[in-house]
Image (cartoon, rainbow, N blue to C red):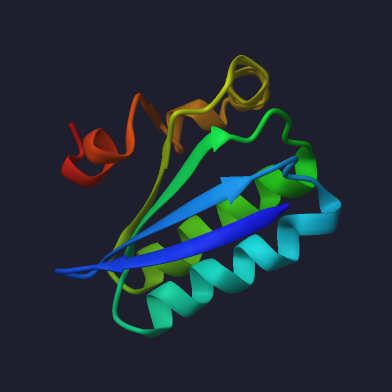
Length: 111
C-alpha cells in the first residue's frame, strides 16, 4: 500500500491511497493523517479510488484519523470508495460517521 500526501490551502490535505488497506498499511495511513493534522491541515480527505479492499484494521485507521482531525477542529472525509469498502462501512454502520463522497472535490466542499 502507498499513501501520497498533498497539502492544500487553506488547511486541507488529500491523501491518495493505492493498494489494499489492511493491517499492513493501517499504521502508515494513520501516521500520514497525523502529519497532515500536525502541520495545520485538519481537513483531511482520503481518496480511496485506488483501494480495492479494506479490512477492519484499515477501518480502524480511518476512525483514528477522524478522531485526530476532529480534535484539531477539522474532519476526515473519504472519497470514491469501491463497493467492497462501502460494504465494510455499511456493515459496521460507519457510513453514518464516515460518509462516502463520490469524488475528492465533493469531499473538500462537503457537498
